[in-house]
Image (cartoon, rainbow, N blue to C red; front, side):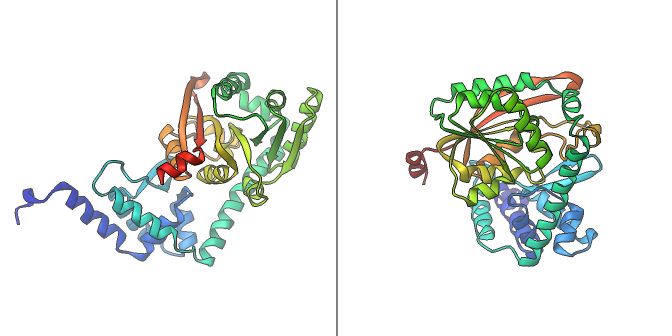
Length: 332
């Protein structure tokens, strides 16, 4: 058969068919639904040899089903979004939906939980050791006032935004809480570090902010309570959390229709020193990564600002909104 007579899309579908034709590769795609995992983490979860898994990951990468990012000497994998407006987009979407309908095997779920716990422990241990110096370390990268002001401007521009309940994830020393307390009737400060939460409480109290609730834990716990909020703020938090993509999914369950998630975080960079000095787990994120995770969670990207900073760093301030119910119905 003349190879020139084969439509490029058919070649792509053939490549996809090969990538889909292995249970281990399907397990990898299932694990990467809301996770970004390294090769060693995947080998631990799947109990397989690194050399064999690396081959499977190359097949998935060649087919466009996973994308990669380098963190120092490590490569992390995540599930790619289907390319829009392509003939094979419905095929990939159907595959992902079918995979996601399959419950994760208990042993995989347990091992994944162990990895998340390990990452969380690293983060908590760092903040416990360095709480007093945290602000100085952060200011090596960015002045809080710069991105905080931009977030407040975006909140003011969000026409559909109500001002009843706001949740700040990882408030740090509480520097942003007084501004939120002036704009919202109810403020919830959520952190997984007891020490940082207590510091936030002291700072906000000193500033005269009294309408703030302090909660120890994770977003998933609040979602289990059935809480709904008008706004979620995550300032310079994502690069500290074990599973950044999961934050979008958990936030989506808490946001009321029309409500927004506002994120300020580092753009992708190569400054390895921040892992030791500032406790960062991730070297920032590309704008596409945040947009992809938001889309996976059912959130719509809105306003975006990019702020150039010292030492070559750049911060992205992003808004992601949950559809109004009417919009969701039209979309369905």
